[in-house]
Length: 231
Ligand SMILES: Nc1ncnc2c1ncn2[C@@H]1O[C@H](COP(=O)(O)OP(=O)(O)OP(=O)(O)O)[C@@H](O)[C@H]1O
View: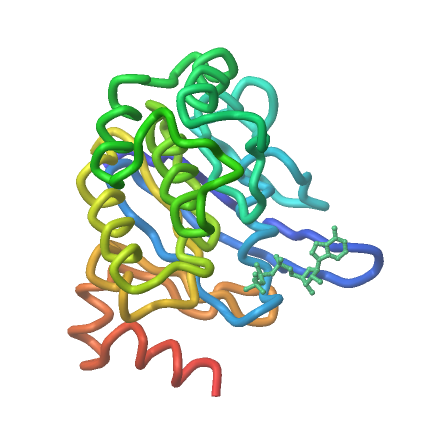
C-alpha cells in the first residue's frame, strides 16, 4: 500500500515543554487511523502539524512526499475543533464558500452528504444546533476530494443517534484513495470503523498497529487496550 503520511523522529515543544517526542508513524492510503490518548497528550497538536498549521521543532513529516505547507494544503481536509463558519450564512452559502476556497471541493458529493445528514441547504447557520453544525462541518470536510482527512474530535457534544450517523457518513463517503485520521475519546463507538490505531502517551506513540491484529494478539478490544495503557 502507498504511504501518504510519513512521520520520522518528530518533536514538538511549546515554550520549553516537549508535547511530542520522537514520533514515528506511517499512514497508508485507504486506511482509517484512530489517534487516541488522554486529554493533553498531543493529539490535536499532531493533527495541526500534519495540516501545516503548526511546525515541528525537529524530525521529518511528509505528505505524499512533500513537507506540510502551501503545496500540501490542497491535499489535507481538516475538521478542526473550532467552528469556522459565519452566522450570516445559510448552508448553501457555506457550500459556495468552500467551493471558492478549495479546488478539490466536490459540491455534488457535499450535497449528498448534507441530505444524508438530514440537513437542508436553506438552513441558517446561526439557527443550527451544535449537532447539526457538526454534521454540516463534517459534510463540508468530507465534501472535499482530499488525500488526507483529519477529523479532530468529530463527536464533541454529539448525541448517540447523530454519532451513528456521522460514523456511517465517514465510512460510506470517504474514498479509498485517501486516508483518515480521527482523534476521539469515544473509542467504543468508533472502534468498528478503525483499521489502525496509534495510542499517544507522554508525547510518544505507546502502541500502534492494525486493529484486527492487535485485538487478536491481545485478546482485547481497542477500548480495553486504551484503559490498560492509561490507568
Ligand atoms: N499553542 C499552544 N501553546 C502552548 N501550549 C499548547 C498550545 N497548544 C497546545 N498546548 C499544550 O500542548 C498539550 C497538548 O495539547 P493538545 O491539544 O495537542 O492535546 P490533545 O491530546 O488534543 O488534548 P484533548 O484530548 O484534551 O483535546 C497540552 O498540554 C496543551 O496545553
